[in-house]
Image 1 (cartoon, rainbow, N blue to C red):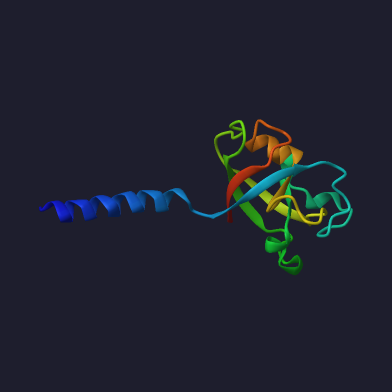
Image 2: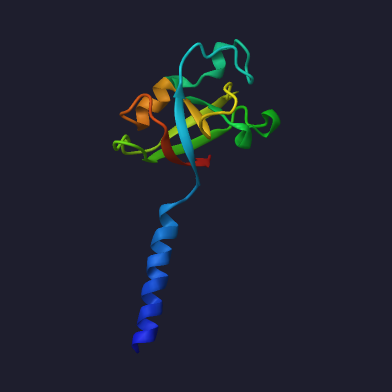
Length: 132
């Protein structure tokens, strides 16, 4: 095999490796504190919150005029200041529309959800997320 073909094969393999690392969309995440009710999705209903309190409020880009209510996302921390990320992914449910204008991040996680993926409680982190 000549050097030109070998180089092309190498580039293709490296490209496939990097493509496989990112499966979802890239955004940012912050945490938000209680009170969590009323929400735009379920009002004051307590049954809207999943076990473990792994829920989120989403920004305009994901809100989809309320169609985001109940959607589930799998997300993981990618990076942030002072290495805030914990390993692994979490599954969260959309229960609200971000109340701050403008929303400080793509997704605002409950404090319990944020603590599952970040060691820093008040950080803004970079995340990868995919709808499940």
